[in-house]
Image (cartoon, rainbow, N blue to C red; front, side, top):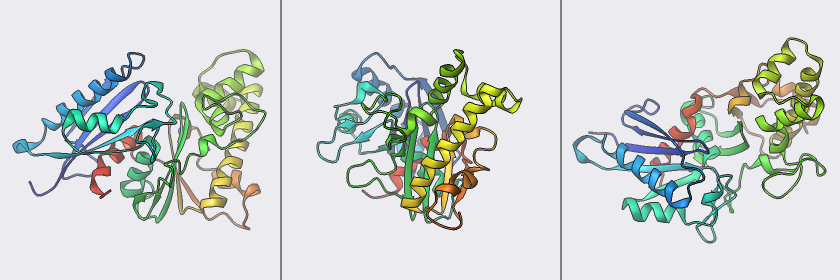
Length: 302
């Protein structure tokens, strides 16, 4: 065929999603989703990813080859090539990319999953055509990725865009990263749930808290208003530094009513400018944006 095939794999904490793209940049020829063997050790994850890649390779017509891109919940160290800063602990300290390349016999591109999300939305989604894009993940964790002129900017240490581990409150809750009061501890779904539980003692899902706020429940409304204020403050710090054309919101919490629509007003008190021209949009590519971005990693030379 005249177009290249691209395999993309998104390694998540609960599921591994894989796609293979052909001529259409956002509609896969085949999609596979499997449970992540979390808790079964590093080798189980390597085997699961290799099996998935092999199954997707089988969809290539005529026995041809495909580029392979993988999004992971962490970063590859530029110093030693091993995984760091991952919330899937089994990956930390392992040469994940090199191990996969040895098993698959193919070159593998690998990036942080939030970077993959940002790339997909910058190329073919809510920020298509924008020069500087900041992609935000508000879900089980809080992540971010930067795309400049259609290319991921991962930085000298591979941590560019990691606003989830900027400090929002030095006296705040403990974070898995070893510090306290990170943005993630406040703006993730579990962070919102913790704030509600701390007030009323009830464990409730984030979307339900937002729904209760909409019906006028005082506790939920107060917790949501605090979340919105923290969101505006934290995102304004990123915009003050990066000044992106478009911010794209992804992850489950990003679908909360009014969050994207009110983002500029929530940032306004904290902006170093007399106007907010940044465009804030929800994602267009849905839950599969990350895996599509991973597939598109193979479109760029290293």
